[in-house]
Length: 366
Image (cartoon, rainbow, N blue to C red; front, side, top):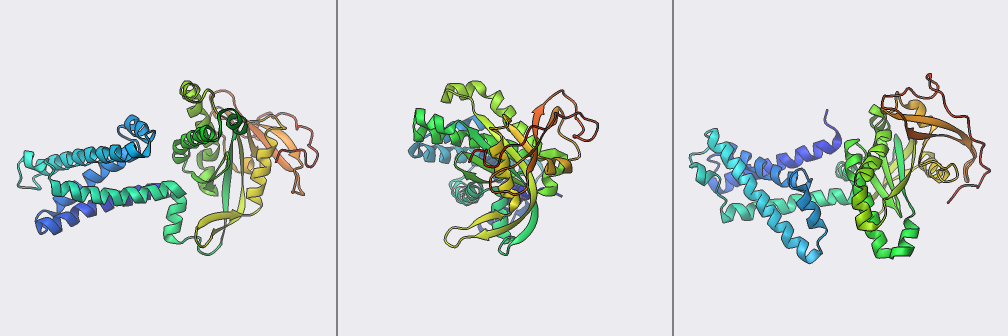
């Protein structure tokens, strides 16, 4: 079964094929419906591949750095190029398989009517994609299907990623520069989160909240892999960060999971929100990172539910700690790299560090 985010792209691609079929029905009296379908799939595939950075990724990145007055015409030209590429590919396919009586030169030629129709369909699809990107892929789909119109009790994993030193960066470079910095950091999260089947559900100041349904996040320890994939990407691009912002981002991460109530809230502005102790506990675990001198903390409750950690990652127990606003202490472990092979979890023949002395209640940052 395809993951939910992949179904979205499959549906968009099928919509493109349907648009090509509709064009053939309207303007060619349905003479070659299969050819229309192929053209639609080819044009849609080229446009979506460009939009997702699968082709000409460098051009897409440079375009997004342009001011709005330059980005809009540049984007239009780029999509015209993608439409022409799609028509050429679709024409080659329909000519090769004998789906049209046109010559090859006519089959790959783009006419003003085809261009206008393709631009109109592309604009609609890009709008849908932008809306999805704006509110998050999983949230967007859940809005469409109305999954959380009524509150739902479910188990989810939460990852809070906090950008260290963002306040000091703003004081030194100004708020606008700091916002550009945070925007670049949050953009860096997108690919690792997507590859690990997560959903970036919210940004709160300098922190990103990433979630998984419990079963999906536990599978192959995706929730843990996501953190280290983000760190790997930042490290790989360290020189670029240094050149652009004069610093390389550092992150603090907290992982926890449990039962929450998920519901769609709001009237004029809708939002899917999570209510329950699991969310609050994740925030408290993140606040323990600084006093425990740990970059990545995971609750022992969530750790116990993982079958194995990703290769090269180990967990060191830091014991139970009291935090503000919570009666029961939180038992946490630090995640760090070690070796290159998968390690069993603590309690499964792996030595762990001795527990750290508990903090006094209220001795955490918030």
